[in-house]
Amino acid sequence: MIINDIERGRGAVVIDPHGELVDVVLEKISTRRKDVYVLDPTDISWPFGLNLLEISTKDPDRREMEKSLVVDSYITLFKRVFGDAAIGPNTDDIFRMSCSAILDSPSGGGLLEMLLILVNDGYRKTIIPHIKDPIVKNYWDTVFPSLNQNKQFATANLNAPLNKIRRFLSDTLVANIICQKKSTIDVAEVINSGGVILARFSRGDIGFENSALLGTMLISKVQIAAMQRVSIPMDLRVPTFLYVDEFQNFVGDSGGAKSFAEILSEARKYRLGLVNMAV
Image (cartoon, rainbow, N blue to C red; front, side, top):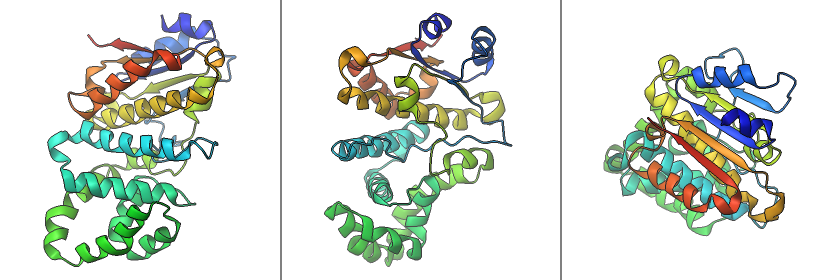
C-alpha cells in the first residue's frame, strides 16, 4: 500500500518505531528520487532538526492561526509523553506563555529556549520587546517576575515544567535533534509536492519515550501542514497518506488521542489520509 501510494505520486509520511518498515520501503522505491527524506536519530554525525516550535506559513494573515496550532500541539506533545495528570493548570499556563513568547522572537527557538525563558533573566529580557500578544507580554513583563520572587512558586510550580524540559535536554541524541531552531525539512513543502518522509524512530535504538516524543512531534507537524492547505484549492491539494506503525504508542489515551481524532475528522477536506497500522 505504501509503495503503491508513492509510485502514484502521492505524498507519504511513514513513522516506524522499529526501523524494519522503513528499510523495506527504501528497498522498493526508486533510488533516483530526490524527494525522499529519511529521518534517523541514530545518524549522530548528521543529526536532522525537528522543531515543533516554528511557524512555516509565509502568509501573514494565517500566521496567528498557525501559532495557535503550534502552541496547542506543544501542550499535546507533553501530555502524550508524560500523561494528562502530569500537566496541571500551572504547567500548562507556563508552557503556553513560553511557546507564545518564543514564537514571536525573530531568532526563533526550540526546547532549549523553553528552558532559557524560565531560568535566564538576560534571555527573557531579549524576548519581551518582540511579544505581540498583550496578555503574554504582561505575563513575562509583570506576572512572572513577581511570581518568580516567591520561593514557594519556584518550588511548587516552576520545577514541574523544568523537570519535563530537562528530561529531553539531558539526552544528547534527542537534544541534538529537537534543539535546532529550524527543522531540516519543511513538512508542508514535502507533502504538498508529493514527497516522501520516512521516519526510523526505532525504540530499540533510542528508547520508548524518545521514540514517542519524535513520533508525536512529526505527527503534529503533519497535522499543521495539512491544515495549512486551506489556502490551496481543493483540486490542487496533493493526496498525502500518513502511515503510523503501532499507532497506539504515539497517541496514547490522552491529548495525543484527541489530536489524532482531530486529524481524522478533518483529514478528508485536506486530502490527508491516515493508516493506523496498530496490531
